[in-house]
Image 1 (cartoon, helix red, strand yellow):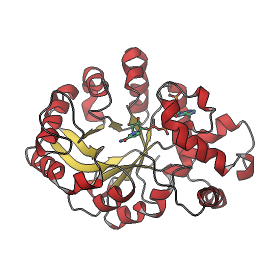
Image 2: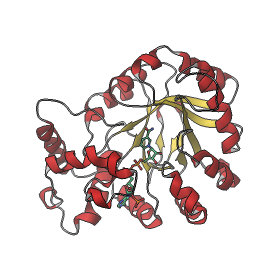
Image 3: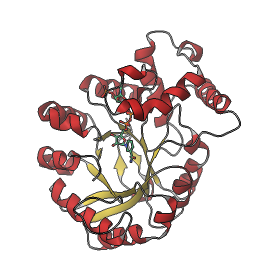
Image 4: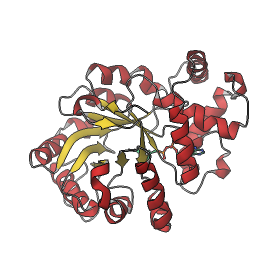
Amino acid sequence: MTHRTLGRTGLHVFPIGFGSAPAAYLKADAQAATSMINFLLDNGVNLIDTAGSYPGSEEFLGQHLMNRRKDFILVSKCGPKFTGLPGEAGSYEMVSATVDRALKRLQTERIDIMLINSLNLELFQRGDAVRALVDARRAGKVAHIGLSGDNELLDYAATLNDIEVVETSINIVDQRNIDLALPICRQHNVGVLVKRPIGNACWKDLSEQGGIYQKYVKGYSERFSAMALTPADLGFEGDPLTLWPQIALRFSLFQPGVHVALSGTTRQANAQANLRSAQMGPLPQDVIDKIRSAFHQAQGQTPWPALT
Ligand SMILES: NC(=O)c1ccc[n+]([C@@H]2O[C@H](COP(=O)([O-])OP(=O)(O)OC[C@H]3O[C@@H](n4cnc5c(N)ncnc54)[C@H](OP(=O)(O)O)[C@@H]3O)[C@@H](O)[C@H]2O)c1
């Protein structure tokens, strides 16, 4: 698969990245998780996404992956208030302290991309979080700065000189950012990482979603039912449970302006399937049109916002 240039960072990225949010899994079976991440790195993946707010994730990566630090672009996040660190959410103090803590937890001297996350538009517009990251960049602690967020916050942040990368929700049931945010990102040459790229497997029965996912995926699950699409409607034959992950990933990964889809799986077989799907390339245009049209019809008069 051809590498893509992550906007004006100039970094060359493989189209699939690894999202390390399911940190409970990483900790519960460190050997299996390390082996899966190594498998991805051995098969081209060169970007790993974490956050100060994924409990245990930064520490896990620091302990188990830093022997091959040069093999990947490291993305982490800061912004919300953390107990034990000084300052309020979005403050200069809190963001600076979170960067320093991330460097220690990740056992690295520099984080390639630091994103501001979990702030509302008003807090973000105060500018303290961006100022703290600009100073961290000047000090060599981070190389590039960005925002993880959606909707109006994303539209605004993507126009700023200091925001080089954004991480946002784009998938078959979350298309708001395709229409409104991606054009802004393309115009400003902003790197785009997609979170929730397969819509958290929203075609599965909610009762089959593990623990924390049940509440998190509910909104997507309802949208998926409202869109009432089947793979057969899109011209695919076979088992929907095998086809949906492929269709969903190809839909988000090949939207114009998207650079990386963050795969959030905990299973090597699914990681492998996602690599294979990505290799298949974009969906045919008539399939994309049907998915876009089902979304627009199902949302009706009140546009569905991007879900964070
Ligand atoms: N900044 C933020 O606010 C934010 C929010 C959400 C996500 N993120 C980042 O984006 C990453 C990805 O997000 P995500 O995990 O929510 O997105 P996702 O990849 O859309 O959803 C992950 C879910 O899909 C399942 N899955 C993955 N590949 C599959 C396949 N081939 N077949 C069947 N099921 C499959 C996974 O289950 P299995 O584990 O069973 O495969 C898991 O339940 C996160 O890890 C995190 O790094 C950031």
